[in-house]
Length: 389
Ligand SMILES: NC(=O)c1ccc[n+]([C@@H]2O[C@H](COP(=O)([O-])OP(=O)(O)OC[C@H]3O[C@@H](n4cnc5c(N)ncnc54)[C@H](OP(=O)(O)O)[C@@H]3O)[C@@H](O)[C@H]2O)c1
Image (tube, rainbow, N blue to C red; front, side):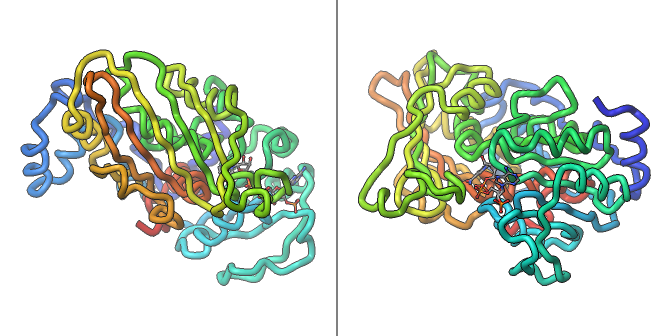
């Protein structure tokens, strides 16, 4: 756990003014979600008063510009910069007015110039945990992003020790550690005020981001375990060669894998507090995930009622879009986009099972965009700054 002094130092030295985010979580709606106000009324309210619509129906609304207390650019170090998620993040940082990338680390690209970053000339280094810790001690970096495979990050985190710098980890290594200094960075579902004050943030997995967003609004009406059928493009398997990213193996093919016990199955179940079955597959396209989620209900519901619950829950969210029909929610429409799209809401003849579909670009909202969303929150910028919406 970081000491109070370390936190104070970070907020004092690296941020211009203290944030007042703890007061910004909206009060709970006066009546229960889904029943609070008729959706037509809500829409009407929204056209005249967008904020009160969002605040009334979304229990964790975006902090938006209220979080933008830092007027100084932040210096970023990226470890694992050669990989797919690292490269996607570099593209975003290049367009962000307040993010100043300083160090990129890759063993394979050491000595080469970073391409696609136009703000300054940067040469890839192969930084060891000790070198990272020294740069941090010398005050050269405000935020470290770890875009490393699972199981590789710990020596870097240990070397940084009690540093007050922000660390964001894209791997699964710290996703289950919510009692220590780590926060789980699913901004739409976890208290944004806590993320804004955290300096150790674990980014959710790509499948698990889409799955949790597709399930969270309906949790109180669950009548059994949901089942998630997921198909990802092969960039989800990273750059290390394997059958899951072998384009010849994937041509005209669909590859099921880890059909029980996938780490995202644990992650979804853990963070939703509801056991969820997850069955992943990989397909021949490069990026983009489709999820089909079958959800047993504890009472009869209509498709319209369910869609309304989702629309109200995500009111004001810029990175979650609730749509009506499943066929419009397709992978190629989500590629390169930064939001999650949720739709379908097909209810069976008993009225007690709904099928919801979700799509997400695994490298954007599934990784780099979500990382930047968390960086913005924790470094004191507008949560959506630099995210093309
Ligand atoms: N791909 C996705 O869709 C996605 C989505 C969400 C989260 N994630 C997670 O994000 C992390 C990165 O994923 P990715 O797809 O970008 O992986 P990747 O393409 O395989 O890249 C991994 C990076 O880590 C470096 N690396 C590998 N082993 C290392 C080691 N032992 N020590 C130091 N550096 C090492 C690699 O560069 P060098 O070998 O040149 O050093 C490379 O830059 C993973 O934990 C993944 O689970 C991925």
